[in-house]
Length: 320
Image 1 (cartoon, rainbow, N blue to C red):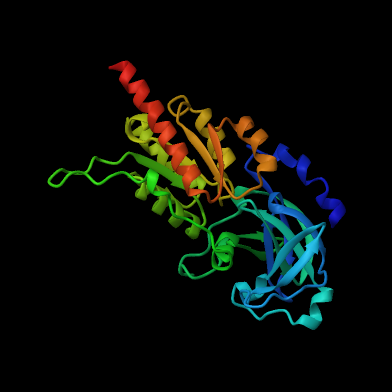
Image 2: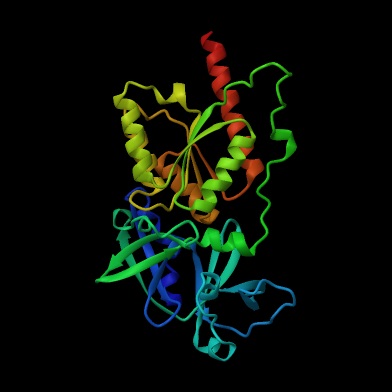
């Protein structure tokens, strides 16, 4: 498996083609799960783990891997299934990933193989599963249901991330008796409920109105509807902030579609992703996004928004 993953860095040819590669694994004996290969740094047999006092119950321990101390999360236990007994871990695997600039290990029962897929074959979770589930998407491979876990939700319950914007970015309240200035509107697209809530809270805190969507396909359909209604997007919306990994249509393809549409091509697009920065600079350039921000850095996000506001106000001032 490690030999297969050595070629991950060369897989940027998938960018803009609405394709991804999934690493398939199991947490128990039956259900198959998947994770985007771009998130995976390494797969290895479970090493010896050292338990830390007062750590989160889902953390099986820490391991020293290539000179770095990495916490190992029992992924089955984290999503509500039975934990893997300590005596069985030697027969299990650890998937080393990078999310939100953090290296994290996930303990799984077994690792199968890598499959190349189209994002159109990846679908949102069925309606009715509720907000408490840990699924971000589902697909079918060779007649088997494959579940894609919302790892950002798992990590938000384990890692204490600071999601608040610094006070310097929060607008002052208007004088008493005055109406607050109408907020600029921003479109966001993210399939993770946790990530959407983080984005909405951050953007509303700095005075913006938010229109949100669960995936790239919904967002693209909305943009086309706006164009058909005669709305010039740059007059109504400051920017689009899009995740990259999304069911139906990924953020790269969404950006490519926008750049290829005569009425949308000048829209300001920011890709907001937990994918490693190792890949993203070349990818951003390839699809034509204006910027890339790693999740979740609220102050960096706020700076990006205010920089674009200054650009827009400068253009508007010049026109006046």
